[in-house]
Image (cartoon, rainbow, N blue to C red; front, side):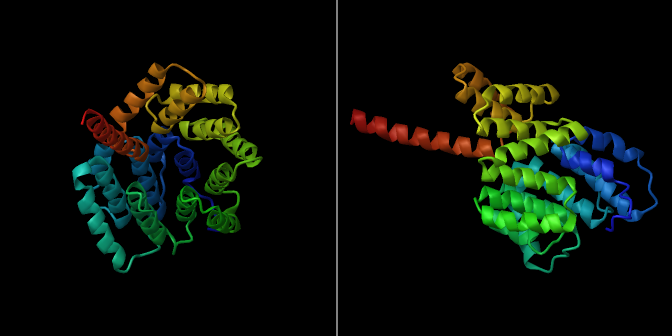
Length: 300
Protein backbone atom coordinates (compact mmCIF):
# COMPACT_ATOMS: atom_id res chain seq x y z
CA UNK A 1 0.00 0.00 0.00
CA UNK A 2 1.49 3.35 -0.98
CA UNK A 3 1.56 6.15 1.55
CA UNK A 4 -0.91 8.14 -0.56
CA UNK A 5 -3.60 5.51 0.07
CA UNK A 6 -5.73 6.16 3.09
CA UNK A 7 -6.21 3.09 5.27
CA UNK A 8 -9.87 3.25 6.26
CA UNK A 9 -9.21 0.69 8.97
CA UNK A 10 -6.21 2.45 10.51
CA UNK A 11 -7.96 3.20 13.80
CA UNK A 12 -9.32 -0.29 14.47
CA UNK A 13 -6.17 -1.96 13.17
CA UNK A 14 -4.05 0.12 15.57
CA UNK A 15 -6.50 -0.57 18.40
CA UNK A 16 -6.21 -4.31 17.75
CA UNK A 17 -2.40 -4.35 17.64
CA UNK A 18 -2.11 -2.29 20.83
CA UNK A 19 -4.59 -4.51 22.68
CA UNK A 20 -7.61 -2.20 22.76
CA UNK A 21 -10.01 -4.98 21.74
CA UNK A 22 -13.24 -3.40 22.93
CA UNK A 23 -12.64 -0.38 20.71
CA UNK A 24 -12.36 -2.70 17.65
CA UNK A 25 -15.61 -4.40 18.59
CA UNK A 26 -17.41 -1.07 19.14
CA UNK A 27 -16.06 0.74 16.08
CA UNK A 28 -15.92 -1.98 13.40
CA UNK A 29 -19.71 -2.17 12.83
CA UNK A 30 -19.88 1.63 12.42
CA UNK A 31 -17.29 1.69 9.64
CA UNK A 32 -19.05 1.93 6.29
CA UNK A 33 -16.90 1.03 3.30
CA UNK A 34 -17.57 0.23 -0.36
CA UNK A 35 -14.30 -1.63 -0.71
CA UNK A 36 -14.91 -5.42 -0.42
CA UNK A 37 -11.34 -6.02 0.83
CA UNK A 38 -11.72 -3.39 3.58
CA UNK A 39 -15.07 -4.86 4.56
CA UNK A 40 -13.53 -8.32 4.90
CA UNK A 41 -10.50 -7.00 6.82
CA UNK A 42 -12.81 -5.07 9.15
CA UNK A 43 -14.77 -8.24 9.98
CA UNK A 44 -11.57 -10.23 10.46
CA UNK A 45 -10.24 -7.62 12.94
CA UNK A 46 -13.54 -7.53 14.82
CA UNK A 47 -13.76 -11.31 15.21
CA UNK A 48 -10.09 -11.55 16.18
CA UNK A 49 -10.79 -8.94 18.87
CA UNK A 50 -13.53 -11.25 20.21
CA UNK A 51 -10.99 -14.11 20.26
CA UNK A 52 -8.57 -11.89 22.19
CA UNK A 53 -11.35 -11.35 24.75
CA UNK A 54 -11.84 -15.15 24.88
CA UNK A 55 -15.42 -14.79 23.53
CA UNK A 56 -15.05 -17.80 21.27
CA UNK A 57 -18.80 -18.52 21.07
CA UNK A 58 -19.42 -15.19 19.33
CA UNK A 59 -16.93 -16.16 16.63
CA UNK A 60 -18.16 -19.73 16.22
CA UNK A 61 -21.78 -18.55 15.95
CA UNK A 62 -21.03 -15.53 13.78
CA UNK A 63 -19.00 -17.17 11.02
CA UNK A 64 -20.74 -19.72 8.79
CA UNK A 65 -19.80 -21.83 5.76
CA UNK A 66 -20.71 -19.01 3.35
CA UNK A 67 -17.99 -16.71 4.73
CA UNK A 68 -14.69 -16.37 2.79
CA UNK A 69 -11.46 -18.25 3.57
CA UNK A 70 -10.03 -15.51 5.79
CA UNK A 71 -13.03 -15.75 8.09
CA UNK A 72 -12.85 -19.56 8.10
CA UNK A 73 -9.25 -19.25 9.34
CA UNK A 74 -10.38 -17.01 12.22
CA UNK A 75 -13.11 -19.51 13.07
CA UNK A 76 -10.57 -22.35 13.04
CA UNK A 77 -8.43 -20.56 15.62
CA UNK A 78 -11.48 -19.87 17.83
CA UNK A 79 -12.46 -23.53 17.54
CA UNK A 80 -8.94 -24.60 18.51
CA UNK A 81 -8.82 -22.31 21.55
CA UNK A 82 -12.32 -23.13 22.81
CA UNK A 83 -12.12 -26.89 22.45
CA UNK A 84 -9.32 -28.75 24.19
CA UNK A 85 -10.68 -32.11 22.99
CA UNK A 86 -10.60 -31.06 19.31
CA UNK A 87 -7.07 -29.65 19.30
CA UNK A 88 -5.21 -32.75 18.11
CA UNK A 89 -7.63 -33.24 15.22
CA UNK A 90 -7.42 -29.54 14.25
CA UNK A 91 -3.60 -29.68 14.27
CA UNK A 92 -3.58 -32.87 12.16
CA UNK A 93 -5.89 -31.22 9.65
CA UNK A 94 -3.68 -28.13 9.62
CA UNK A 95 -0.55 -30.24 9.05
CA UNK A 96 -2.09 -31.79 5.95
CA UNK A 97 -3.23 -28.38 4.66
CA UNK A 98 0.27 -26.99 5.14
CA UNK A 99 1.81 -29.83 3.15
CA UNK A 100 -0.31 -28.85 0.13
CA UNK A 101 -0.09 -25.56 -1.77
CA UNK A 102 -0.85 -22.68 0.57
CA UNK A 103 -2.04 -19.30 -0.68
CA UNK A 104 0.58 -17.00 0.86
CA UNK A 105 -1.49 -13.93 -0.02
CA UNK A 106 -4.06 -15.02 2.58
CA UNK A 107 -2.26 -13.36 5.50
CA UNK A 108 -5.10 -14.11 7.91
CA UNK A 109 -4.78 -17.85 7.31
CA UNK A 110 -0.98 -17.70 7.78
CA UNK A 111 -1.31 -15.79 11.07
CA UNK A 112 -4.06 -18.07 12.41
CA UNK A 113 -2.19 -21.24 11.41
CA UNK A 114 1.05 -19.94 12.96
CA UNK A 115 -0.86 -18.95 16.12
CA UNK A 116 -2.15 -22.50 16.48
CA UNK A 117 1.37 -23.90 16.11
CA UNK A 118 2.59 -21.24 18.56
CA UNK A 119 0.10 -22.52 21.16
CA UNK A 120 1.29 -26.05 20.44
CA UNK A 121 4.81 -24.71 21.13
CA UNK A 122 5.79 -26.01 17.69
CA UNK A 123 7.81 -22.94 16.75
CA UNK A 124 9.51 -24.55 13.75
CA UNK A 125 6.17 -25.28 12.08
CA UNK A 126 4.94 -21.76 12.90
CA UNK A 127 8.03 -20.15 11.38
CA UNK A 128 7.70 -22.30 8.25
CA UNK A 129 4.15 -20.98 7.81
CA UNK A 130 5.19 -17.33 8.24
CA UNK A 131 8.44 -17.41 6.30
CA UNK A 132 7.18 -16.89 2.72
CA UNK A 133 5.13 -13.79 3.62
CA UNK A 134 6.09 -10.13 3.48
CA UNK A 135 3.06 -9.05 5.50
CA UNK A 136 4.07 -7.02 8.55
CA UNK A 137 1.93 -9.09 10.89
CA UNK A 138 3.56 -12.32 9.72
CA UNK A 139 7.05 -10.89 10.24
CA UNK A 140 6.08 -9.50 13.67
CA UNK A 141 4.80 -12.91 14.78
CA UNK A 142 7.97 -14.56 13.46
CA UNK A 143 10.05 -12.10 15.52
CA UNK A 144 8.12 -13.04 18.68
CA UNK A 145 8.95 -16.71 18.09
CA UNK A 146 12.60 -16.11 17.25
CA UNK A 147 13.01 -14.10 20.45
CA UNK A 148 11.34 -16.93 22.38
CA UNK A 149 13.94 -19.28 20.89
CA UNK A 150 16.74 -16.84 21.87
CA UNK A 151 17.60 -16.29 18.21
CA UNK A 152 18.22 -12.57 18.62
CA UNK A 153 20.42 -12.60 15.49
CA UNK A 154 17.53 -13.79 13.30
CA UNK A 155 15.09 -11.52 15.13
CA UNK A 156 17.30 -8.54 14.26
CA UNK A 157 17.27 -9.52 10.58
CA UNK A 158 13.48 -9.77 10.49
CA UNK A 159 13.10 -6.46 12.34
CA UNK A 160 15.29 -4.80 9.72
CA UNK A 161 12.98 -6.26 7.07
CA UNK A 162 9.93 -4.74 8.81
CA UNK A 163 11.64 -1.36 9.06
CA UNK A 164 12.39 -1.41 5.34
CA UNK A 165 8.72 -2.15 4.55
CA UNK A 166 7.20 0.40 6.97
CA UNK A 167 9.19 1.73 9.89
CA UNK A 168 6.33 3.92 11.15
CA UNK A 169 3.85 1.07 11.52
CA UNK A 170 2.59 0.32 15.03
CA UNK A 171 3.57 -3.32 14.47
CA UNK A 172 7.15 -2.35 13.57
CA UNK A 173 7.35 -0.18 16.69
CA UNK A 174 6.03 -3.01 18.88
CA UNK A 175 8.46 -5.48 17.32
CA UNK A 176 11.28 -3.01 18.07
CA UNK A 177 10.15 -2.85 21.72
CA UNK A 178 10.03 -6.67 22.08
CA UNK A 179 13.44 -6.87 20.44
CA UNK A 180 14.89 -4.27 22.84
CA UNK A 181 13.45 -6.19 25.80
CA UNK A 182 15.20 -9.34 24.62
CA UNK A 183 18.54 -7.61 24.04
CA UNK A 184 18.43 -6.02 27.49
CA UNK A 185 20.97 -3.67 29.04
CA UNK A 186 20.39 -0.05 28.07
CA UNK A 187 17.80 -1.26 25.53
CA UNK A 188 15.30 -1.78 28.38
CA UNK A 189 14.87 1.99 28.60
CA UNK A 190 14.36 2.27 24.81
CA UNK A 191 11.68 -0.44 24.97
CA UNK A 192 9.99 1.37 27.85
CA UNK A 193 9.79 4.61 25.86
CA UNK A 194 8.10 2.84 22.94
CA UNK A 195 5.41 1.30 25.19
CA UNK A 196 4.99 4.62 27.01
CA UNK A 197 4.66 6.65 23.82
CA UNK A 198 2.07 4.22 22.44
CA UNK A 199 0.08 4.40 25.68
CA UNK A 200 0.07 8.20 25.47
CA UNK A 201 -0.83 8.25 21.79
CA UNK A 202 -3.43 5.50 21.64
CA UNK A 203 -4.60 4.03 24.92
CA UNK A 204 -2.89 2.51 27.96
CA UNK A 205 -4.03 -1.09 27.41
CA UNK A 206 -2.98 -4.12 29.49
CA UNK A 207 -0.75 -5.17 26.58
CA UNK A 208 1.21 -1.88 26.62
CA UNK A 209 1.21 -1.62 30.43
CA UNK A 210 2.61 -5.15 30.74
CA UNK A 211 5.33 -4.13 28.30
CA UNK A 212 6.21 -1.20 30.57
CA UNK A 213 6.11 -3.43 33.65
CA UNK A 214 8.48 -5.94 32.01
CA UNK A 215 10.95 -3.10 31.30
CA UNK A 216 10.73 -1.88 34.89
CA UNK A 217 11.18 -5.35 36.41
CA UNK A 218 14.14 -6.08 34.15
CA UNK A 219 15.76 -2.94 35.57
CA UNK A 220 14.87 -3.89 39.15
CA UNK A 221 12.37 -1.00 39.48
CA UNK A 222 9.72 -3.06 41.24
CA UNK A 223 7.75 -0.16 42.76
CA UNK A 224 7.29 1.41 39.33
CA UNK A 225 6.36 -1.99 37.91
CA UNK A 226 3.76 -2.44 40.64
CA UNK A 227 2.02 0.84 39.85
CA UNK A 228 1.68 0.11 36.10
CA UNK A 229 0.54 -3.47 36.83
CA UNK A 230 -2.06 -2.10 39.23
CA UNK A 231 -3.30 0.11 36.40
CA UNK A 232 -3.41 -2.93 34.10
CA UNK A 233 -5.40 -4.85 36.76
CA UNK A 234 -7.90 -1.98 36.96
CA UNK A 235 -8.46 -2.23 33.21
CA UNK A 236 -8.79 -6.04 33.11
CA UNK A 237 -8.40 -7.96 36.36
CA UNK A 238 -8.32 -11.27 34.50
CA UNK A 239 -5.64 -10.59 31.88
CA UNK A 240 -3.26 -13.60 31.94
CA UNK A 241 -0.08 -11.58 31.26
CA UNK A 242 -0.93 -9.14 34.06
CA UNK A 243 -1.52 -12.04 36.47
CA UNK A 244 1.78 -13.68 35.48
CA UNK A 245 3.67 -10.41 35.98
CA UNK A 246 1.94 -9.90 39.33
CA UNK A 247 3.11 -13.36 40.45
CA UNK A 248 6.69 -12.55 39.41
CA UNK A 249 6.49 -9.15 41.11
CA UNK A 250 5.19 -10.52 44.44
CA UNK A 251 8.09 -12.99 44.50
CA UNK A 252 10.65 -10.26 43.90
CA UNK A 253 9.23 -7.83 46.43
CA UNK A 254 8.92 -10.33 49.28
CA UNK A 255 5.14 -10.06 49.53
CA UNK A 256 3.35 -12.79 51.45
CA UNK A 257 2.97 -16.15 49.71
CA UNK A 258 -0.84 -15.84 50.08
CA UNK A 259 -0.90 -12.92 47.64
CA UNK A 260 1.16 -14.80 45.08
CA UNK A 261 -1.02 -17.90 45.51
CA UNK A 262 -4.19 -15.88 44.93
CA UNK A 263 -2.95 -14.67 41.55
CA UNK A 264 -1.78 -18.18 40.73
CA UNK A 265 -5.17 -19.73 41.58
CA UNK A 266 -6.93 -17.15 39.45
CA UNK A 267 -4.56 -17.83 36.55
CA UNK A 268 -5.08 -21.61 36.75
CA UNK A 269 -8.81 -21.13 37.12
CA UNK A 270 -9.34 -18.81 34.15
CA UNK A 271 -6.47 -19.64 31.80
CA UNK A 272 -5.97 -23.39 32.05
CA UNK A 273 -4.61 -23.71 28.52
CA UNK A 274 -2.20 -20.72 28.69
CA UNK A 275 1.35 -21.95 27.88
CA UNK A 276 2.63 -20.56 31.23
CA UNK A 277 -0.03 -22.51 33.15
CA UNK A 278 0.53 -25.66 31.09
CA UNK A 279 4.25 -25.47 31.80
CA UNK A 280 3.60 -24.87 35.50
CA UNK A 281 1.17 -27.79 35.81
CA UNK A 282 3.70 -30.04 34.08
CA UNK A 283 6.43 -28.98 36.54
CA UNK A 284 4.08 -29.48 39.50
CA UNK A 285 3.20 -33.03 38.43
CA UNK A 286 6.91 -33.80 37.87
CA UNK A 287 7.71 -32.46 41.33
CA UNK A 288 4.93 -34.57 42.89
CA UNK A 289 6.19 -37.65 41.07
CA UNK A 290 9.77 -37.13 42.28
CA UNK A 291 8.55 -36.37 45.81
CA UNK A 292 6.53 -39.63 45.84
CA UNK A 293 9.52 -41.65 44.69
CA UNK A 294 11.71 -39.92 47.24
CA UNK A 295 9.32 -40.49 50.15
CA UNK A 296 8.83 -44.14 49.23
CA UNK A 297 12.63 -44.63 49.18
CA UNK A 298 12.84 -43.06 52.69
CA UNK A 299 10.17 -45.36 54.09
CA UNK A 300 11.63 -48.42 52.35
